[in-house]
Image (tube, rainbow, N blue to C red; front, side):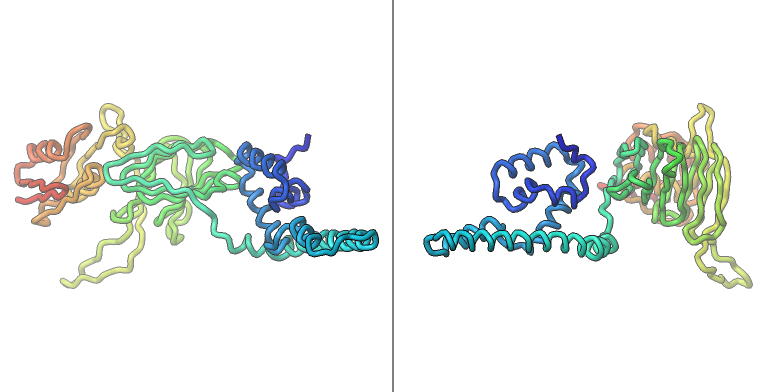
Amino acid sequence: MVDRSKFNAEDFLVDCTFQQYCAGTDKLCIGYWEKYINAHPEQEAVITEAKKLYAILSGNKRPLAKQVEQFKENMFPATEEKVVKLQRYLWIKIAAAIVLVLGGLLIYNTYYKNTATNNIVPEVYTFATKNGERKKIMLPDGTSVLLNAMSVLTLAKNFNDKYREVTLTGEAFFDVKHNKEKPFKVHTNDFNINVLGTAFNVKAYPDEISSEATLIRGLITMEAVNGNGGTITLKPSQKVTFYKNIIPQQQNNLVKPMAPQPEITINHYTKIKDSTIVETAWTQNRIEIYDQDFSEIKNVLEKWYNVEISFTDPALEKYRFTATITNESIEEVLHALKATENNFKYEIKGKQVIISK
């Protein structure tokens, strides 16, 4: 029995039954290969490539058998001499077809295949969440990813063949399967992370003024996309924050805007009395607000509850709170915050939340 598990496109192409399947000239061959393809989905790509190659080499013409049949029908009643001539004609045509296939394979390997490889855009898998949604994803290499609200994770369909690379917009918690031969990489708009096997949280929302990575277990190295700051190595319990813009400085009563430039800080993650880590509390379906101002809380609540929050007075954004949110509704959360700071009111109109004095 022939083992076709490691066949490439050319191996399939030289199989006469595969040629008859592509040509559609033999029902048994067609039935066999349809069953084979259904039973071996992992070879779909290489079989598709072989079929395309057959079409290219045959010039998308009618199958040879049909051409021969048509030729016979147009012949006069065959005499012995005509039969001999016909046999010679067919042998010449078969020889020409073999030369065409071999020549086509050479051209395909030296030109078409290389050109196609250079121009193909890798297909990707995309995982996305909406406001108020969280999603758990198991990657092909065994890595577990928990995706927070309003986030997008993409990876190429050849992920884990030679490389393990993903791109993240938003927030996710990664528990990476160890494989020293294939380092795991996370790309964001602000920084790139390299790991082997570890657990860490990445928060990189485009609408927030900072992005951060928090290491729970293992070791990671990271660097800013623009190269500023060099390579940073994080150890467990450390958190690095990239601030996307430096606040303009004021001199002589004039505000001098500075060019956007990340500013990097490294601290330890925040752990509260029951050993909960504030930065990863969302993975346990809870929000830990620890001495944060209203403007920071606004971003979290909007994504968590799928609402839009606006302030009628900029001073309200500076109010600071500490709280734990689990299964409460948005109204219950605002009521609890109001109980600690009586200088604001709130109004909820559908998905619109208005905070006022």
